[in-house]
View 1 (tube, rainbow, N blue to C red):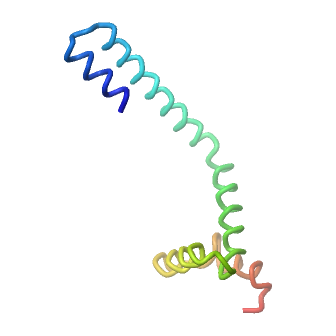
View 2 (view 1 turned 90 degrees about the vertical axis):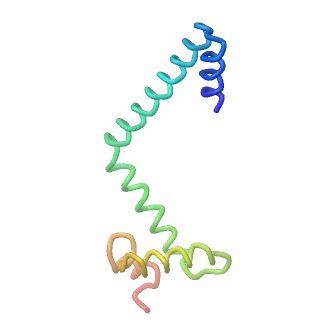
View 3 (view 1 turned 30 degrees about the vertical axis):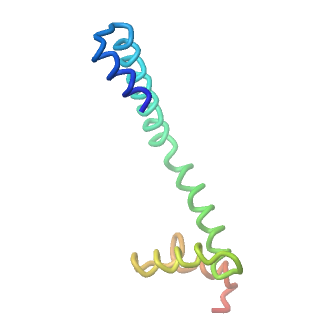
Amino acid sequence: MAIGFVGCLGAIKENKCLLLTFFLLLLLVFLLEATIAILFFAYTDKIDRYAQQDLKKGLHLYGTQGNVGLTNAWSIIQTDFRCCGVSNYTDWFEVYNATR
């Protein structure tokens, strides 16, 4: 919003300094986004592993006291996507120790 304001003000006032600042800020934002995208694709495997670990931790909290939102989220995900666990159904064996 602030960058847009600088650009608008620069265009209204026809001020080269404000327009240059606007351009440089937009260029900086673009370069940051491009860098993040490149890093995301370079580290996709690590991000995937971390996400799976966090999701499996969430499985262990399924149905526990005070985690109604998490329990509902897992129930909805499994119903809508017709899937079980994070990787497959064996993820639930770790949670319930093959008792259910």
